[in-house]
Image (cartoon, rainbow, N blue to C red):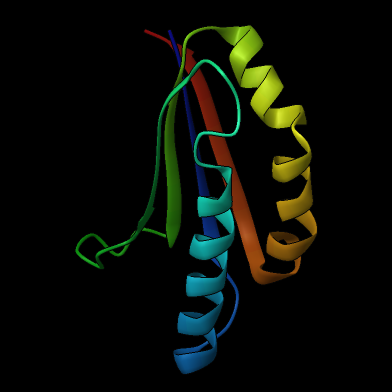
Length: 98
């Protein structure tokens, strides 16, 4: 199994940032179940407890590297990039085998 975690720091202040966070969350949720081998796909918004720089996170699990690559290259996943890109300040990601 391979796990994929991606995090975004979202641009904006106040209400604009809240709207941007919701847009990113809703956009990411369109990727749920888009490829065979996707075992889990969760989108979360920071609860504000630790003051970490990340606002939105995706936690996902795939049967293997091929399934993760299929997800990354899927047209639905590719289509979210131009939506999220302008709304983010930073992005981080980790893929690891478990």
